[in-house]
Image 1 (tube, one colour):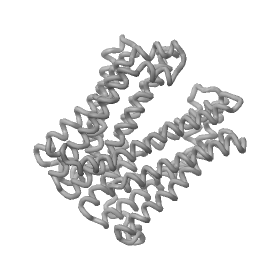
Image 2 (cartoon, one colour; image 1 turned 90 degrees about the vertical axis):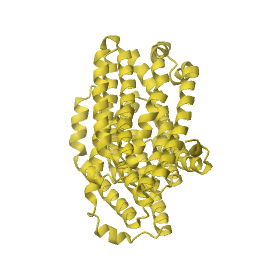
Image 3 (cartoon, rainbow, N blue to C red; image 1 turned 30 degrees about the vertical axis):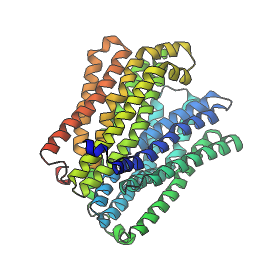
Length: 449
């Protein structure tokens, strides 16, 4: 272990993949802040409410389809590690085909789905009107948004994190500029905000395809035409992996939705305090996701090359830096938690309520880092079935802990969330330890999926 930690080249490999992804993640909350600021300066509050509700619906839809990026990263990284250029090309073409097929389904069925969801919503008629307007426009960006997932995953799988970083940064900057132009300059209001996001997605798609084209030529990958003709070859493995990661993501989303709705039954101050504290969770996610992405690419590469020693070194190096980041976040939450809450909300009642649950959040970085890292390990190994099963167990534990502590109100929700994070890590760690000891982990996962 000490020899691995003294390996400067190892640390460079980890940071070359992790840091660009952390930096690109920072643009995500920045975009949300600009969106809120631009729409928030209009003359009625229902414009902002409509964008918030419609944006939540479209973001949740796209987030559930994030398996397109994860599966592509794992499969491409393994092909890259095995120096299999034909497989690298095949993963890209199959991923894009699946992304556009799913986008077509979303566009065809978006109207009845949107009508049903907004009919069930308790929001005002004005908010529902503008939310549906926003959603109906944004859905036309699905072909680009979903293809961008595949492009990012494919580039990351080829050990290239800088191109995905510039892809995200450029897309969000275009979105911000068009937001200001369309909403404040042209006065298009909610329609302008939605159109800005759609055009930004397509501009990102063009840039992403250019990045792929450059890599394709540099690596002299097989003819794109040949891969399109044989797109069905090996598609079964991709479908199974995507299915398992989708079910895993659905379980994950269930816990956050339950936490939001259950918190709403405890009063307005509790809902607001939970929203503030969820910002802490997002901060942890942005920091840890970068190292999880690095883990996906490095683990996939090592498994593709069937290099157990390299895999061990990558695990040690990535875990070391994740632990350092987690300790720093825990220290920051403990020492500066009150100040961070004050920056997010200036309402005394909300600040006081949030401080009650801050200790739970201070423990989150050290508890959750393991599930982020292990997710990256299993995505890189393309072992979606194990991720799906362990997530199901963790969700059951979440509801069991909440029920057991239900007399403690909002503490029960945060205790259940912390237990959920811990069980995600423990479940995958047990599976990983077993497979590592029995020399199973380095074997192809397709037969077990």
